[in-house]
Image (tube, rainbow, N blue to C red; front, side):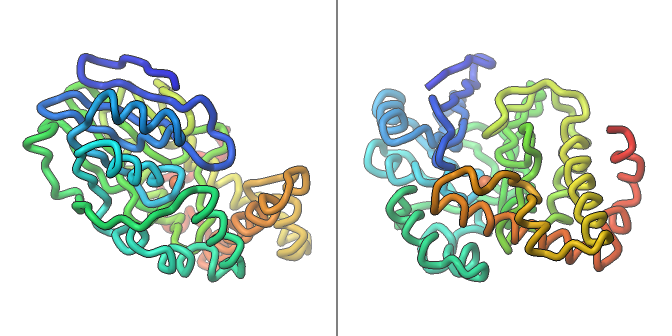
Length: 302
Ligand SMILES: [Fe+2]
């Protein structure tokens, strides 16, 4: 793992590898109490760090397994209170619920359930607390503000440190690949609302889950530009008479799906199918700009 001291109270922790959709970068907050957020570094590093640091709280930004699987280590290797987004409680206590709201509707229930349980290590949570935007972390970190930033998942949340103008953004899409919305429970319109909200914050440094620490001016608008470009690309391909199967095979988020071994090829196709459907629905409704006239011109800025 790589630990980077950001301030006296914030440390950014990145895993050695992000392969296999199984890990992400997180932060350590040393305030009135010690908090880990999204510390999903893998089966060796997370337990070691928990043993060494003994956090008071273990928080996740959202239920996706590459962010949440470490909560089982938190239960075994620390006394930390586990805090989860209020809106995502059902996902975290039931494997069936996850499957029914992710791969199930896309026809991949069995393969995904096997991967989630056996490769990603899903275990239903039994002892946990729920947080929302109304939660104030008086005893742990009173300076930390929760911002609900849904879209990537229904209850996705970001953590803002206004005094230092630092944001832990979770998975809003600030990496070179752009925003991801490959499950049926993702929502492009909510995602754009969240990105516009984040763009309005005073932020000097963004700590991301998969894209490092960035100081990029206009980063959130860049995410919206990614979405607009995908919409335009799908619109143009449909306009040329391409069918859904060929567009998905060519790629919405994932080109070259055939280059990875199974079951990954099937998973990437599943996610591209869901992303295609989100765009198709939005195109039928008149396109993203119809709902967000303020983003007009973003695509042209390149
Ligand atoms: Fe995610």
